[in-house]
Length: 396
Ligand SMILES: Cc1cc2nc3c(=O)[nH]c(=O)nc-3n(C[C@H](O)[C@H](O)[C@H](O)COP(=O)(O)OP(=O)(O)OC[C@H]3O[C@@H](n4cnc5c(N)ncnc54)[C@H](O)[C@@H]3O)c2cc1C
Image (cartoon, rainbow, N blue to C red):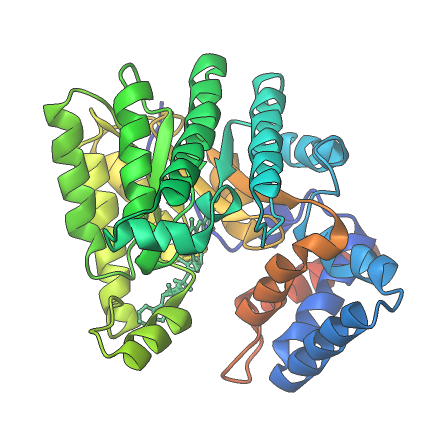
């Protein structure tokens, strides 16, 4: 098999092959809107206000941003999206994106829903992983208190035991049904607690292969060392390490908090340092592929390309199941579909949940895609190029 990385991310016909002309027009409308900082700020502000005033905006949201970035309102409703991506070799990771649960009953609901995604994945060839955020299962305050090693009162101790049980129930189910489970990374002031739980689960369920994956945010100066240390612990205790690598989603929040409380920011001072750390982490994982399974969670073209080069250097087959590439649904289709076409293992996070409950997720996507430099985003440029290509093709 030819393992030479011949992948290019420029072919928009490949990138958008699963999208109809009307879906392309919708994507063009959404990205044109969010591309302008002031229109984006106005639109997101108006939507937040409309939701607060209970105005009937649900249908409008569902038909626009929700349809573009989410798979549906329930597991069943995501099926047609997972199938349409699957036809082109792009898999889906069902991501229950309801945030802000605060009660024990609410945490149990999230656990049960996550277990349903594992059961769904078990029966579908288009769904290779499941995922959860620990803050969906636990109070952030308690996770933080555990991290600071403060003494817990008996209520807190039993609440933390419940958190551990929820995480264990999910990972056990993942192990039994042979569906690997990703644990998302969150803010640095709760991440040590999340890491602790993740390693406890890996020691239990990763003896034969990587079932439980922890996430490493390479914008954090500590993450490369954390990755190396966790590899050594895995080697010493004879289990496999599952590592999802991301740059990190909470940069502003992290920096603001560090400044406010007067401690050194845990984030690299510039993007170049983050990029270098990310690529070093990829290299470390591939160098240690006998024990590490890696997922590259990134929309950065160079990092994805770099990983294909590393695989080639190590004579790995494109379809080696120790290496996954992952992007978010509704973004960077040029990366996902080109990699899948070249034979690599690719998956998209496919968020789902009731329309109004996934609004925090959707608002973050709007912010992320807003241009700061006043130029068209990469996403918008590719969408417009494909619309033009289809138009020219129809005239021929
Ligand atoms: C499949 C998938 C899963 C994800 N899971 C998680 C998760 O569990 N936890 C999480 O936190 N995020 C997660 N993310 C989001 C991710 O962390 C990034 O926010 C997002 O993907 C953008 O980074 P990039 O590598 O795609 O692109 P790029 O455009 O190359 O990088 C943008 C990122 O670089 C970093 N950055 C930008 N400027 C600077 C600077 N001046 N100094 C230092 N760093 C800088 C920031 O992290 C920023 O988000 C996930 C993303 C994907 C695609």
